[in-house]
Length: 391
Image (cartoon, rainbow, N blue to C red; front, side):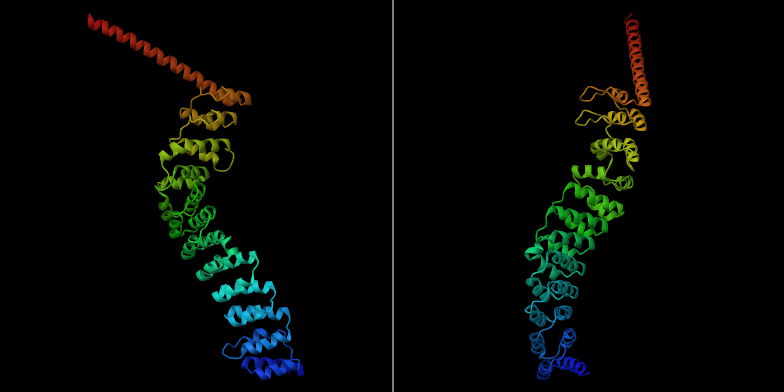
């Protein structure tokens, strides 16, 4: 009973700022563990530091010091934080206190805790928290530390994902690598943050990341962001977009004028190759058909001298072979080994494709003979008419 009285009386004395009474109770052996956070609740007394020193000098457990640190960080007690840090608080409490200071926006306390040395993992978490709560001052503070600098890129991605325009600007001014800028652009495009997308597009971004960002904007059906890309993407980005887009995205980009018939003519051939080669993968069959309905160059050759017809013939894509023939694919084209699409189909044993290509070649020859015959008849008739006229 007496111990309970001493403990609670000490709490009262600390709360009221009665230094002498507090010191006496500590000397008498009052239980000082687990009361530090309570002692800190009142910040209007002038003697709190002296009382706290007395409590800490007596010796308290790590848990008590840790709880006190967390409470002080949350409530902005900078002087108490400094005192506790001098008493070697367990690192895990320092890290948690940093997160607490960030959550409540106590920049000066965050600075004190960072100076103490925080694990790299917690630096990243702290930056993420600062960004999540839009604490620009703390973002600036952390990003100026040596460890924080290595995480600026990741936090830029986070800021862009959450739509924090001011934080994005702040971090860009501190120097972020192109890879993280690209990822931030992709996330901002997906999230629909037009201002951030517009800002990031002014930075150096790879064609791959621009293409992915454009696809993300299309997936989100954000026409305002699509408008930022319209007429503002280079050939590499267009190729990337055509390569990565699903059918739904392709159709939307085409409808919105981000890509057009001329783009498909110029860059669609490589995509057609890929779509035919991976025909069984979801969407690729539809993509191949979609491209063939447009101005794609069906006789484009790759580095091996193959046309899309070669690719379709050796992979057994009969439907595509039929469409290619309808589009005027050259059945006589030879690859670098001197083989035609018919030769490749024979090698693979695709009898239906062999028959299809053979019949087409015969039909072409007959058509050529008929054309030659008609040309000859026309020439004879022309000569006869000339002679008749001369007579």
